[in-house]
Image (cartoon, rainbow, N blue to C red; front, side):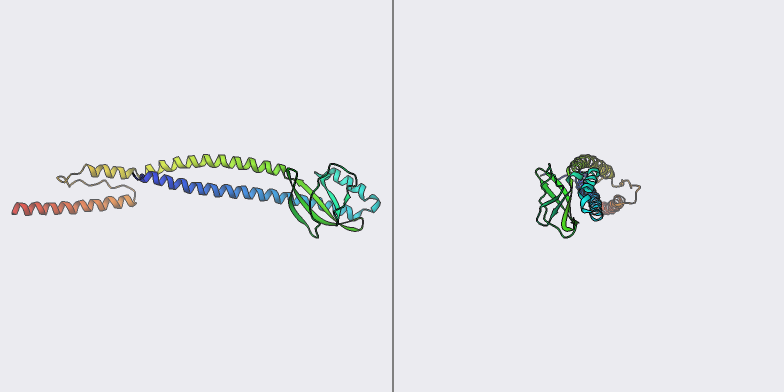
Length: 240
């Protein structure tokens, strides 16, 4: 089986390293953006819950429901907010409607979780609250649909960008490896033109102070020693 050329092997290694680097960068970007979006959503949920708690703690029982109705009317996704007692009985809103049946257990501290309702996911903050002078818990949900769409779009764009970068880096790696090894081809061509009858020729010395220059110098030193040895053999033969 014929082995691959050095330039092709270098290009393959360069492609593999580029793939790992691009994958890690893309994953870090995707993870960082996802974490930032969730952190922002969690802060938003906590701000909404804080506004509900402030109304519930500063309003009389007679005006409590009316004040909360006004608040959830101006809050984004406020119609999804619910207040339940420790048994799961809904205290607010009192009217029946198309509300989310969120299966969230009663909480004694702020807990944020993802809840699947039907085919949609919601980010839900469960927070303890006092409603009408009795302990209850507050549910402040927010749809994750926009976040899922953003995640899919970002993933698609990252895959497209990573594929393009990988193709470009592979071609660039192959071209660079061919250019880097071009002096080797010059040395090989010059070495092939040499014969045993003409050992006065020497390999050209590359200008760059690198491994190829040292190889050419050592090769020329070897040729010089071979030339001296052959001259001694010829002299011995002539004397004999």
